Length: 159
Image (cartoon, rainbow, N blue to C red; front, side, top):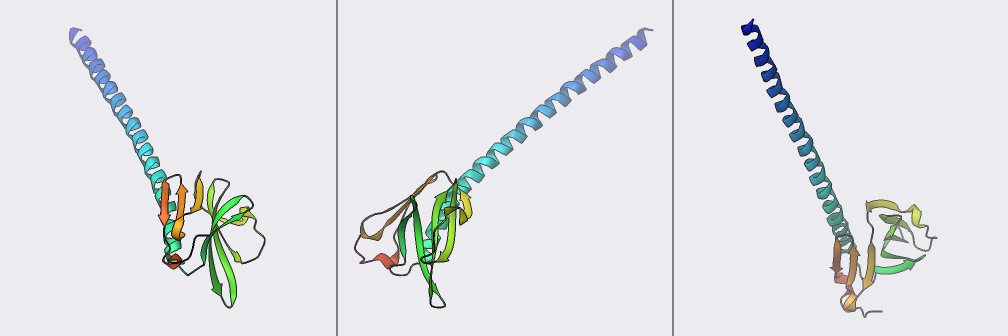
């Protein structure tokens, strides 16, 4: 009788230790899952911010033709405008902020501007443009600001 009672106590003790171990494992897994999610979210946010500035910088460098990069105001929105010519027609690509997204709109020069038609490129809360002396363009976003000095603006007086 005492042997059976000792076995029951041993079994209950082993099951109790197993339950405590299982609870600790589940707690560690849940905490590590949250930590991983938070780190991934932070990484993605920073990546999006850096991507936005990198995108603007590379567009300016790739479209660097004299007098073809400028800031334009369209319906209360400031847009960075890149003019190009295809098949004898003038086109423009405008980069601007609308409804929480940096958007890009490619269209023929002179067409009416409707901000919602632009393709959403990335999320952003802020996007401001300012032309400084000697053709330097200051771009400010959620990630910070960027000074872009188009090579084609050398010698062009500030308007």
